[in-house]
Each structure stands twice: as structure tokens, then as C-alpha cells.
Image 1: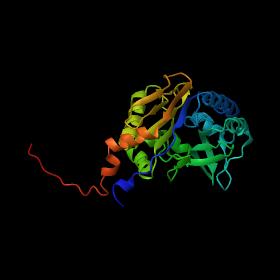
Image 2: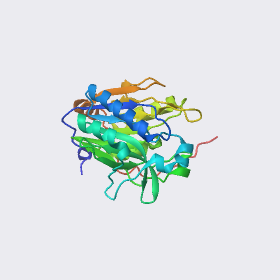
Image 3: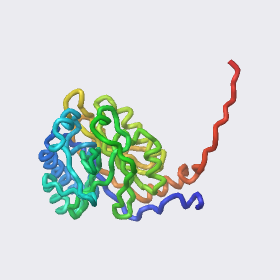
Image 4: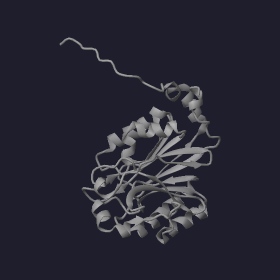
Length: 289
């Protein structure tokens, strides 16, 4: 395979994405679904093709509640990875009405294990369990099991690599998506208030590292010590902000992912083509003190 063949074919059409910054009520999946449906309706008014929500949006990111009420917080897919939980019906219905797609954070119980997950609600209202968070953080480790595989979604001619919060702190995670052919990296997260500098730097860097778009939808609201700052934003393939929601507010960041911009950036910045297959060993030179 030549270096140029490492890059996937660019998409042909634009993809309009909305990163939804919406506060969840811990443990109240029904209320959170109702709010998600409202945000999807608002995103459709903005012409969005895809709406993305934050980490654990459906049950809310509150470890004590997640630990105390797994039945109320979790959804369970069938053997094919489809979720038929009736509590999700309002979201399914609004998605079918608008023919948009939704990626939304959930707590999923599958095969005897519990995962922090991204669910895909497709335009026909089917709910797919598409990705389990691979890098767990802090209290998550006592409640959840690490995912073992990466995940992606093909939406039209856009290949979207998936990540959840702490995943994006590891350059290798986004790079794996890029080498798998991703045109964009779509992340739902939950950064505590005060973590904005790291959050913004990580997602801008992942975009520039891999010359693809990065979409980040952040959790917002809550009570200390689990209060989240949001920071939802969409970054272009050079890591520049295309759209952002202000800290500590609810709202939508909406932007078009442009295939021409993707191709131009990858033509100008050729890290993905130039990267060696093997960086080789390491030599150590002893310097005098």
C-alpha cells in the first residue's frame, strides 16, 4: 500500500452536525429523553443531519445515583445490539419525524457487564448500541467495564470515529480512528467545572493531529462535586473552533463538516500520509553533566 492509499476517499456531501449541551436530571431517564427530543427538534430547525449528546446523558452523570439505581439508569440491548426500551420512544419518534440521526450517551448493561456507551438512534428510529468507552476514569472504574473495541458510524459518505470523554485524552485513540478511515471524531464527554483548558486543548489537538473534524458534546449542570461546565464545540481539521456553546449554559453548537475543507487540509498538512509504519528503536546519548 502506498502512502497516499492510507487516506480514505473524502466524502462528497456536507454533513451538518449539532453538538447538544443539555443538562440531565440524575436518574430520571424519562425526563432526560423528553429534553433530548426537544433539542433534536431545535437542531432540526437548524438543518442538522446529526445531533450529538454528552457522556451518560440519558441517566445523568452522577456516580451515586448510577450505583444506587442501575435498573432505572441502564438500558439493555438485545443480541443484535438493538435497544427496544419504551422509555426512549419520544426520542425515537422525533428522530423518525425529522429523519435525523442522534448519538447519545447511555449506561448499557450487556452480557452481564455494564458500559458507558454511545447509542445511535438512526433516522428510522432504531436504537443501536454502537460504542463502549475504552478508557474509564476515576469512579467509573468501580461501576463500569472497559470497552475492548473502537467504534464508528457510517452516516451517508461520512465515516465518524467515536469516543467518550477520557478516550480523547489519549492521542492513540483518535489516531486509531483516523487510520481506520475516519473523516471526523465524535466525542460525548463530561468535564467538571474548571477543566475547560484541558478539554478544549485535547479536542483541538485531536483534530489537528489527524486532520479531521472533531465534534465534542459536553455535559452541563449538576451539583458539586459533580458539576459540569459543558464546552460543547466543533473543530475544523486544523483544530480551529467552528461553533461553540458558552460554559455553564444549555444550547447547540452547529456547523457544517465540509469535504472540500477536509481535502484541502489533508493536502496541506500531510501527517497521515507521511507517518512511518515503524518509528524504530530508541538510542540514548549520554550527555556530560
